[in-house]
Image (cartoon, one colour):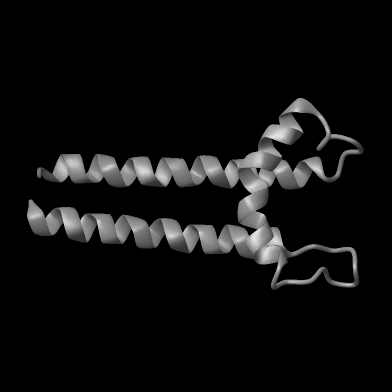
Length: 97
């Protein structure tokens, strides 16, 4: 496989990760607006993002009962997963190319 093909696959993985990061941020920002999560867009974002965030909410309780830092940890973990996936794909495709 050519280097350009590997680079484009890695780029697509990064772009998908960036899009999902923006979805998580948008969902978190909707929590600041009253009844925004009950809207059509809020429900779609909830179906896409809530399963991922719920993994972190199980282990990270809100600070003071009100401040939820689990989205911050989830975004950091997402970055690590994206970088790791890009590295594994580059290694595997480079080894066979």
